[in-house]
Image 1: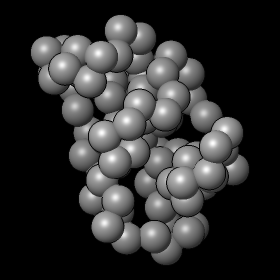
Image 2 (image 1 turned 180 degrees about the vertical axis):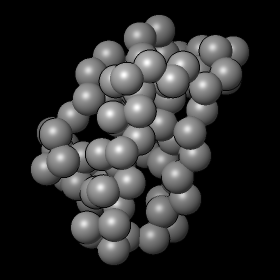
Image 3 (image 1 turned 30 degrees about the horizontal axis):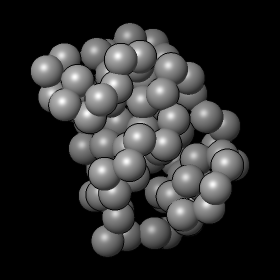
Image 4 (image 1 turned 90 degrees about the horizontal axis):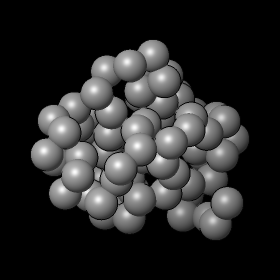
Length: 81
């Protein structure tokens, strides 16, 4: 099962990233555990300085922007984007 973290403080882009991640997970039917991280200290623990960010299985995949739905699907499938 993939572990997915959506990092963000709750801004509009952060909420959009969470929605995109949820839509990609649902579309793919991939078993994922999705966690939204809003605590700044925990976000910094990932080494992220710019939100929103998406972390898949402990690896920061995207930071500072919201990927498209297709890009998010590729990230969840383990593809390089």
